[in-house]
Amino acid sequence: WSRLASGLSRTASSLTQGITDLVTKRKLDTATLEDLEDLLIRADLGGPVAARIVEKVGKGRHDKMIAPEDVRGLIADEVETILAPVATPLIVDRSQKPFILLMVGVNGSGKTTTIGKLASQWRAEGLKVMLAAGDTFRAAAIEQLKVWGARTGAAVIARPPGSDAAGVAHDAITQARAEGADVLLIDTAGRLQNRTELMAELEKVVRVVKKLQPGAPHAVLLVLDATVGQNALSQVEVFTKVAGVTGLVMTKLDGTARGGILVAIAEKHRLPIHLVGVGEGQDDLQPFAARDFARAIAG
Ligand code: GDP
Image (cartoon, rainbow, N blue to C red; front, side, top):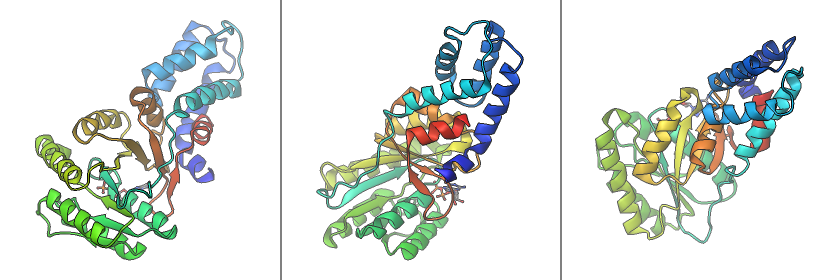
């Protein structure tokens, strides 16, 4: 919780300062409420969430004074109400062997790092973990995955850069089955510059996984970088269409002023949010907790 709170302190301090400036020495009239709505929108919470919060804050308090901490409390409550239904632990179904996760998201969002962190956690729990280097487009992504494999003691299945990603997925599933792996994490490419190619490649990977292992992929995790703000919303749309996203991971919540975007995504897409990234290290991945998050952003 303290890592999350310090990570989100930039989001929180701009909100806190803005609220204090708004309501100190000023009655809660229509103009104040409109300014509050603008402030919440600028904090990336999104129009619908901002409108709902303002309605709550204004209810029964028109033309009265309100303390900044009371406004923050009302915001935290509303945010928690939105987040609680989507906060979902990521659980490896041990009856699926291997349990297959597909990681999707744009380049730089933190897919490979998140795979490494998950591998580390699950290895520590004694699971046999395998990693598939399905981002065959970038040689560096393959190398990075191998580093995580060596660090965590997870086998890495890779082919040379430029190989067919679906082929890597095929090899990986075959090997994971042969060696009795508990979990197989499949990395994928995320070059949004060429959307048609990316979609075709992802669709093919999904098709191959489904064909080889009925019922799989058991989870399709979309990794989102919190620092991109509103762009994350369109990424959810694109990847949900192409890859059938089952849940979200939001990275880089350490030190961003744009943490509010997670609330806008929860409100709009209602997809499960499993995990949050709060740093680059292998222990910097936390289960997503609605109340902690709400308290961290409302200060
Ligand atoms: P990919 O292209 O989606 O596989 O992204 P990477 O896993 O290579 O991550 C891109 C960069 O973001 C790397 O420098 C990571 O160390 C960094 N990164 C990933 N997750 C986090 C996080 O939660 N916090 C911070 N600060 N950096 C992160």
